[in-house]
Amino acid sequence: MPSTFSVFFEDPFWVGVLEIAGPEGVRAARHVFGGEPTGAELEEFVRRDFTALLATALAAPAVPAGGRPAARRVSAKRAARAAAREQAARPVTTAAQEALHEAHQQAQAQNRAAAKRRRAAEAEERRALTRTKARARRRGR
Image 1: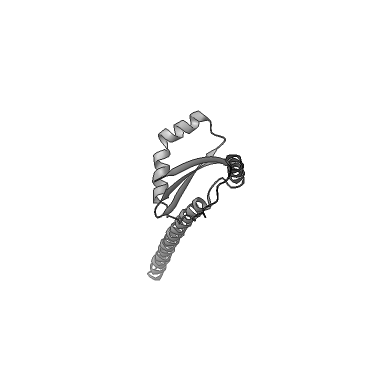
Image 2: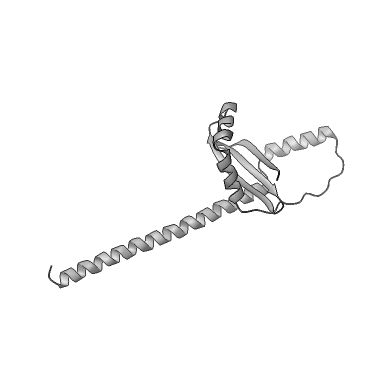
């Protein structure tokens, strides 16, 4: 599976995006560095945290990669200029952005469900306490 790790500035932080392309589509995960990472900081990140980022990317939902139409032969200079222009305009591929968006949506749905369960449990505790107090008042305590 081919994969790429891109580090770029996404206002106001420096962000690294890991893209993994496979037969089922593209999976992606991102890591926010904060300030601009130096070479030593990147090496430390790869040594210490890259496996966790890789596991996150592999757990993310796959988004089908858009197939690119076959282009006619272009001169090397023109291709280099076009690649530089594309990289400056859009550093992360659309498929990677979609994969990150899908993963974010899943996490958001899970958080919403957990919060709903927590609120229901708290409301049930309040109702039970109210019932207990009402029974105590009725018994004259």
